[in-house]
Image (cartoon, rainbow, N blue to C red):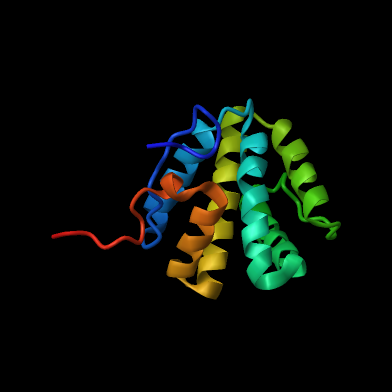
Length: 153
C-alpha cells in the first residue's frame, strides 16, 4: 500500500461512523507524519483538505468552518483562543505557531481535537459519504483504507 502523505506516514482507515475510533485514527495519522511537531503535521493535513472543502463550500465557507473549529477547540484548550478571521493561510500559520509553544503531548491532543472536530463539522454538513470522498481526495485513497467500500460478509 502506498501512502500519499510523507514517506514515513501510516496509512489508516478512518471510521466515519465511530467518532471515538475516528479521533484515535486521526491522532495516529498526525503522529505518523514526518513533521517535527504536531502543529506542522496538522497544517500538512489541513492544506489539501482546504482545497477539497473549498471546492464545495467556497474559500469563505472553509474559513468559516476553520474559525468555528478553532473556537470549539479553544473551549477545551484555552491557549488556542479564536482570533478575528485573517484568511486560511494566516490562520494555519497562527495555529502552527501556537502549537509550537506547547509540549508535544498538549500540541498533539489539541491538533487531534481540532482536526477531528473539523472532520465532524464537515460531515454534519455534507454527510459521511461525501466527507469520506473529500478526505480521500485530500489525503489520497490509501490514507483511508477501505472506508466506504462494501464489505463482504
